[in-house]
Length: 170
Image 1 (cartoon, helix red, strand yellow):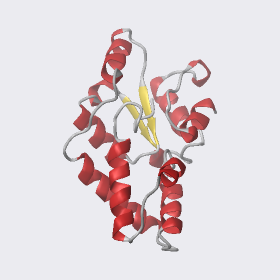
Image 2 (spheres, one colour; image 1 turned 180 degrees about the horizontal axis):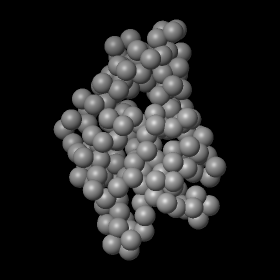
Image 3 (cartoon, one colour; image 1 turned 90 degrees about the vertical axis):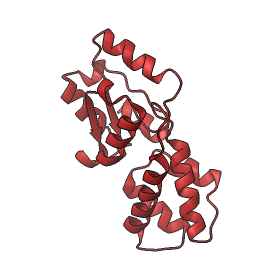
Image 4 (cartoon, one colour; image 1 turned 180 degrees about the vertical axis):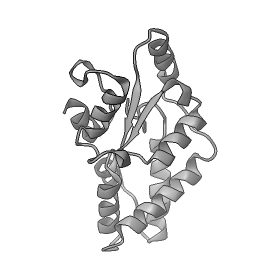
């Protein structure tokens, strides 16, 4: 499973954080910006933020700013997408191995799953920061399959972004 937007309803938290970041720099975060950044790795997202905010060379700093803003946004809790808990519970009951493959950081993954109350239903979680390449490369999915003892060719990846779909297919 992907996490943001698929299992957990965190895309609105990210959008509010991105809106707040853009306001700090006197800019407006648009729907086009959202479409382009959604599902991106931290590296790509930082580069996009630096470009859009006309802050060359500040990729990492801007990404760190938006990450802190999103942590503020999720501090009040995280909602699950409809049916997410039920699906995870049914798969667990059926003894189907499940894991999470995310472009997010370990800190973000752990915090979101804990706040959403589903960390116990995902025994394997992989952050893009724990593998060689982030999505759209397949590395997070391949590592999740390896940790689950699953054949990647016989596995299913569930995604909600073009970047993630490319990773799951690969």
